Image 1 (tube, rainbow, N blue to C red):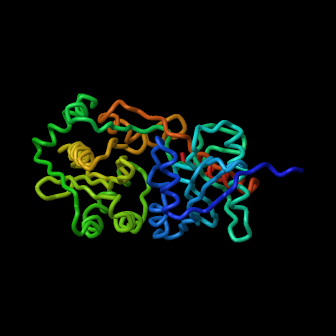
Image 2 (cartoon, one colour; image 1 turned 45 degrees about the horizontal axis):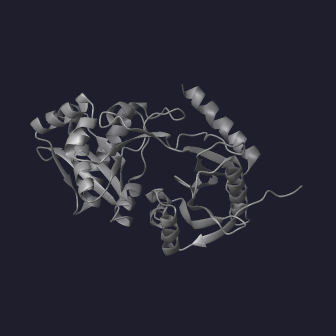
Image 3 (spheres, one colour; image 1 turned 135 degrees about the horizontal axis):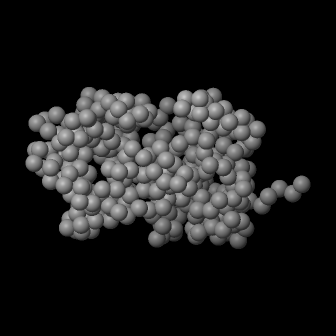
Length: 338
């Protein structure tokens, strides 16, 4: 049986990655696909950054670049190209299949035996499967950071009312530039625990959020929204390649009464715009494949009607039988909980 044709793989240094990232213009390379993010991943327990890579065809033409991290989770290893790989041009089904064959070959080694590879693709092909667990999103709200008047005009009426009511409630928003880890640990993380308990979602260990703030000091920022000196809402944002993103956040029950979260994001948008960012991404709403974000969708769409489609996240199984068994077991477990 003939082996499927594959692309040529070359590992890239950070400088090389940045060179080829520019070659993808006007495509905006996301922070998660950079070696910078790989450095953050290496700070997290049970994650290992595997590197950044270039994929070329037999003629030496650039097909894609991508950065990958291995997750060691619950007795299984799997690899994630988060928001990647990044293709030089929109690939057809044949190119996607060839990329799948290339990734299978790349990561089927005696040293590393992942169960599957998670990646995004603009087109579906038969080796790919929708993930058996919620991991990403396929729609998001993106605010174009034009003038303040234009941003306000793009909001819903209730969004603008929320900002005005926050101002009347005396909400104060600021970026925490000194002792961010201490402030997050003592004041913000307890709010996140409260938010997760109230809204029914799991949260990461404290160390993940503090690692993000310390390992990416030029890209990750902490903002708080306070009333009478008490933090009512907070957000960790990222900035890269003229794109700002609302990455993590939490709010108290009282924040609903004083509209602290509305003031928080309004001030963040103004500040990230001043630093040259062109967009502010609210990082996911409930879409076709991922309905788990329904509880935050109504809030996020108050800031803009600009709903953007995101390439769908898929799994590429490497151990077919084990993947099917695990997928079935987890889906059965979720049904029994309902």
